[in-house]
Image 1 (cartoon, helix red, strand yellow):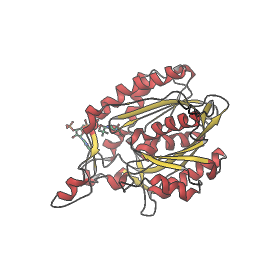
Image 2 (spheres, rainbow, N blue to C red; image 1 turned 90 degrees about the horizontal axis):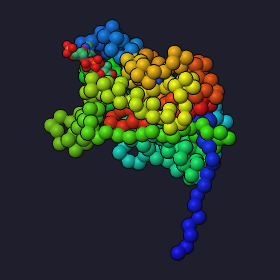
Image 3 (cartoon, rainbow, N blue to C red; image 1 turned 120 degrees about the vertical axis):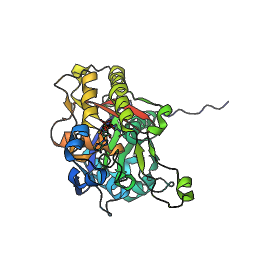
Image 4 (spheres, rainbow, N blue to C red; image 1 turned 90 degrees about the vertical axis):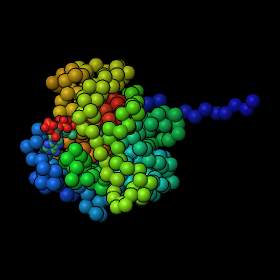
Length: 333
Ligand code: UT7
């Protein structure tokens, strides 16, 4: 039997640079409350959200992803042709096929990098960072560009009390590449399909077409069960990611959870018993819930504002529709 030569890559990997694109239009709670019979006070109390960004017509999934990617590439000091693979985590690219990743790779000038989309909702970015790290260590790619991008305003029913004030738009990106020391810890990930219906597109495309008055199949969410699942089950996942990376809570500098709700962020930090010294991402207050974009957006902000410094140890954790979740410890670039 012939022997197939195994593929080997870098011994260690790291995030080399993080970039972001925040849409220009700021939408305060006041603009949304009338249609859902709510109030600025209720929204702030229950979710911690004050404003969010909604993309203008020319701020597309592609254009926001390209802008965030250029920022990440510049910060990493990596040129587009050095990228061997582009992974885009999104649920709001409006074509079933092909993936938006190939268009983004082409616009960036990556020299025909492999490119594909990942559908893991809010957990997509952490899934993609884990895959990118494994690819670089296995030798399938030298550098991987990971993007989390959403235009959830297209999928949001502004008359739905359960979601209208939550979902928002934006893009974040990270370059994953080789490193002298381990910069991306083991990926802890999983799913719970028993809770498939808790957050979902309301109807599938065949049901939309068959209906008498076809309408956009908006996202719907049973918020409270998701809230309880995220607050408790995800603390266990976060602790597993720390344990598998051999990091104690005391050694952690930053906590960058999915930006879904300020109360979930606080509950996670409490049940993981994170010390007060750990700096916590709270981007949700100004950005709402940007699903796959939320973790890279929050991390980029912490770096830009000096709350996450080069060499710091950060725990990333993301969770959402599926239900799907993923977490890992990383070194801040
Ligand atoms: O990104 C993917 C993962 N997603 C998440 O992690 C989101 C998780 N869920 C949440 O963030 C929260 O469940 C929400 C912020 C969506 C809702 O907060 P909650 O504390 O779970 O509220 P609730 O759904 O239990 O509703 C409490 C009350 C109800 O009234 P009664 O029955 O107590 O009289 C609702 O009818 O608030 C009422 N309510 C509202 N009131 C004003 C529900 N929505 C609204 C609203 N404005 N928009």
